[in-house]
Amino acid sequence: MKAIPGGIIAPTDVIGRDQLIARLWSILDGQSLVLTAERRMGKTTVIRKMTAEPVESLRAVYMDVERVNSPTELVERTAQAIGGHLGRSNQARRWLEDLWSALGGTEFAGVLKLPDAKGLPWKTALERLLGGLAAHANPRVALIWDEFPWALQKIARAEREAVVVDLLDTLRGLRQMHPSLRLVFTGSIGLHHVLVGLQDRGWVHSPINDMRAVEIPPLAPPDAVHLALELVRGERLDGADATAAAELIARELDGVPYYIQHVAAKLADAGQAASPGAASRIIQDALTDPDDPWQLEHYRSRLTSYYGPTSAAARALLDQLATHGLLTPGDLHEALKLDFQPDNDTARALCGPDREPLRRLLKLMQRDHYLTQDASGRLGFRFPLIRRWWRLDLGLGPLPPADDPVRAD
Ligand SMILES: Nc1ncnc2c1ncn2[C@@H]1O[C@H](COP(=O)(O)OP(=O)(O)O)[C@@H](O)[C@H]1O
Ligand SMILES: [Mg+2]
Image 1 (cartoon, rainbow, N blue to C red):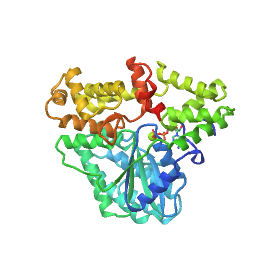
Image 2: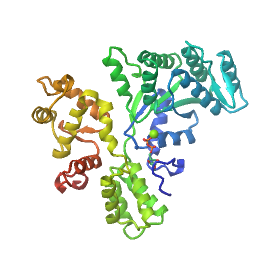
Image 3: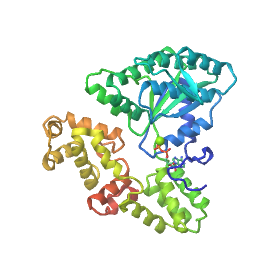
Image 4: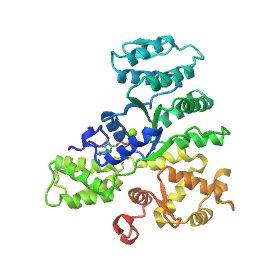
């Protein structure tokens, strides 16, 4: 198997996801899904494999909705994807053609469009499209909308927030009215960023609480080692040290498949036989390279859009945890009071006597995969690799081995 960091992986080359995928199909048998995960964890890879390898009772139709700007576009692209799935000559296909002409839609060179008259009832179109899909598709279809939260944020900006509320409500209503309809929402931005914003601004709202949320975790350690070894062998870089190298790669990269692919690609670029030393140098270089080949800077730059007026406080909390490892919420509160200078009222509230604002921020940072909490309530970086990068960035240097969860275990 060749290294393809960031590329599309052939379904048969997807490592370590069989059990998860079987579980997802089993859940989908009963309800719709929200798939969450840190970026690069392999969400798209998992859902592409599900699309390529359907089960008997369900088919998956994959759509990347990143470029969708309006509910109308969502309907058009969904109709298009469903049309592609249904093929040319069956009853279900005729249903779609009849529906499209009843809605006044057109097809030109295979592209489906709805009339762009103002006030077009996209809601009616969506209801008839998804309702019809639930009634006509045999076997049933799970519609997968990848990068859906991103599309919702764009719709909120391009149209109005009320349109997003309306869209989410309509989809919820459809799931209730058609028990066989299956939707899968996924994307690198958590859906909670859209929902918390709506709730904060007074839209009392729980539009996805009928859907099951499942997190796609990093690869389990044996699978991460297996992936590293397969790549090293596929690139013909294996020698006496290959297994030790694969173990180091899997461990230091927290089982994140994207980084594992990157290290294998770098070894291949250098034509270097895999050894723990060579792998370790490549990882170190990636963490300090000013060109940031793994786009780690993203963990820092996205704080502003994720946490708005509290983003500087979130950064200060991560600085504390990078320095000290595990801390209780109480420790973090004290640290903010001592070291952090808030420049707005929302941030000031984090340092005040009420712990609730800090508790809310820490919960969000857990949902965004920055933090994890241990059994005794202490918080720390979710991924040791990101802590290591954060420390290097702050100029704190490497961790003493006893304080380094990666090496201590
Ligand atoms: N199970 C896997 N086996 C092998 N490589 C994987 C696997 N999952 C992800 N990858 C690698 O990681 C990259 C990023 O995965 P992707 O599915 O695009 O992540 P996400 O959608 O979560 O951002 C892929 O291009 C591939 O190189
Ligand atoms: Mg993706």
